[in-house]
Every structure is written in structure tokens, then in C-alpha cells.
Length: 280
Image (tube, rainbow, N blue to C red; front, side, top):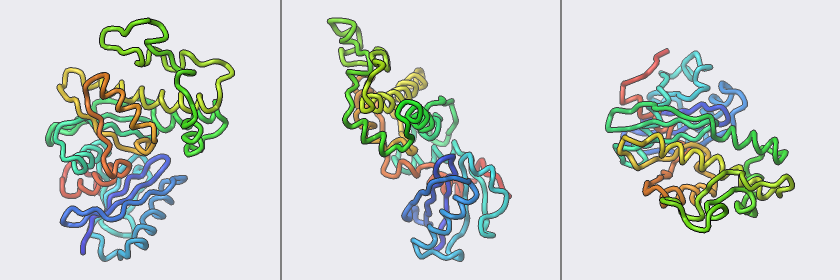
């Protein structure tokens, strides 16, 4: 058995997957990244151990992500190349969804947008809002950046105490905007707002801003299908927030099965794609 290993070395986490010649994915894993080099080698060693894979089983290693810039030598002496992160996003999302035409929304520390039309995969922009924003605002406003704790608090929060909705400023729906649509994020927040309400508001602000920005970025393209990848897809609030945007704008947001591993999957696929690869 020969497999290609894909590794996404991010700011906060490192993710690793293996793909065999038949396109089967082997037990993806992720570990918290404190140092990109240490996390890569730690993830690689653990992956081999957990899946009973030897170095002889590995045909090639493909790395990507911002942390890949710190890797300057082949991993464990194996043939190693670097893949363009945006190409990896697109290939991974296409593999997971089967779609040829979409915008891939990579929700990491910040958010990048990659437009895919067949083999034309290109970065079209992004925004400085993502998991880093969630952690930073939580740190300031809730005195914690423990995301599971923030999520738990948010489950008891009420957005009516935080956001201004159309129904708060108008007795009737506005054209194209129902009364429960958001008019101003955090526009209704009081100085003594509960931690639960604040947590709910922070998560909603991050996700709703990403979703609305994605829709605006697609105007004129004819694309109405958006594939969400990255760690933020694991937030329970994703379903509610993005379903609301789907109904409001008649679009479709998709969270694939291996959403948080799509970039690592795409990195492995870049080996056969033979494009935008940096060789050691």
C-alpha cells in the first residue's frame, strides 16, 4: 500500500490525512499547533502510529498552510513538496462535495474565499474575521479563549438581547428583509449583558459576517453554492446561522463530512494535480 500524506500546517492546528491510490481517505487527525515544525512532526508520527503505517508505505508528503513556510527540509527524509494553499482548498472541497462550481469559504484564523469553476481554481479575496476574531473577542469580553466554554455559554444566550432586528425598528418587514433579519450586530447590547448573551453574540457576529461577505463576493458570478471548510465549521451555531442566510438569499451553504480537513485533503491531491507545487 502506497499513500500520499497531506498536511495542513495552520496557526492554531495542524491537520493530516492520507489518501491511497484509489482515493480513499485514512483516519484524518488534528493536533493543536504551538510551534509549526514541532506540531507537523508530532502529527506525522502520531498519524503513522495510529494507522499502523510505516515510512515505506508513504509515497509522498504534501504540505500546505501558513506554517508550511517554516518547513525547509523533506519530512523524515521522504519525498516532500509544498502545495499552494488556495489550490488545496479548492481540490479538497471538490473532492468532498463533487461540485465543480462553487466558492470555498476557508474559515480559519481569518477567512479566505476561493472560487472554483472546473479546473479554474483561484483566490478571490478574504476577510480578517474568523477563529482568531472569535478567540480575541472572547478573551476581551468573556475573559476566556476556551472555545468549548464559549460555545457552552452561547447555548444559553439570547440574540434578542444583543442584536437589533428589523422587527425592532419597523412594525413591518422591509423589502426582501423579514422582521427577524439582523439590522445591527451587537446594536442592542447593554453594558450589563450576560456572558451567555455576549458569547452567543460573538459567535453569531463572526459567522454571519463571513456568510454575508461570501454572498456579496459571489455577486455577478452566478455562483450560489458555498462550501464551508475549516475549524469554525464545527461550531453548533453554523447550522442556524447559515440556514438563515440560505433562506434570506436563496443560496446554499454546504459543510462537507471532512470539512476541517479539506485543505489537508487538497494538499495530498495536489501531488497528482502537478500544479502550483514548490519542490525542496
